[in-house]
Length: 419
Image (cartoon, rainbow, N blue to C red; front, top):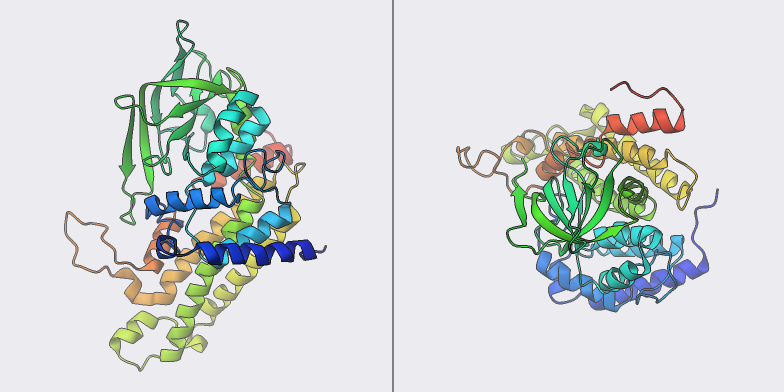
């Protein structure tokens, strides 16, 4: 199978690199590297401005199934989107704050929304002017999305929905302008029946409250969102068809975005390998501080198991890339999203474990003595943050157990798990 890029792709690569180099200046250059996993809350103001810069360049919405330029966006092939993503990651451009609107909501509106909804929301996303967050998971209904309890009641007087309930693990909720919310609109309905896909404005004082969730890494990347009679005027796909729309949206979380994610993984792996090599170069006799930082990798020959695990990590990342390219654009493989999630979730978690093993004893220490008010205090230690953040990789976005159930039931045709 040929995974090479053609002449047109390479021409685009040069253009993309030149555009990024020209525009990644001033405050945007200061935001280089901000906004990755574990730091999505950092530099949001500058990254919002960068989103508008990307919109002016036509770089938002390249993969939308819409005519080129219909909403001010370029239209790129799948390989062209990969080329752009690779150049974007190579220059460590700021983490995207508009990715939920661009990659999840917009294709969903194109597939299920009305012409009026597309005309209202897609241009603002393409210009980088409106940010979105996702209101799916709830306490008690995370991986089991069909168990949600957030309710929405339609007022016959004005036709508007009043939303009441709670969502959790909501990325960028503090900064988003809108939230797409899966809510129960049919009283007494159960599981996937009676759900609707609603668009809710976040700026509703007294009706929408956002509370940051402090993680064990010390950061607050996720949030709880409380709806108390929040008004929603838009329902996508029709009332009661929310499950179909929601599942269509989840199927979009693969393909090019998976390849982009792997570029970030490669950079993290390179840092772990560099720390390992530095430890090997220093050796055990270079002073207590250096030896503590380098252990247990001070001498590669002393720990062949660790060396082999690092090599395996590199090989598995290459395999994930080939698998992502192999399934790029495929629509007939029901198990592909679940397989991809299982692969990258476990891989990234193992990388976090390797990061602290390479650091050795120094990875267990924080910058200050423990105190009751700062039980999780960490320094600006990339390895510590990577380790703590990746503990969640096999849980969020659908736990490993849920992904295996999907593969067993929908792909292999095995009996459903008893409930």
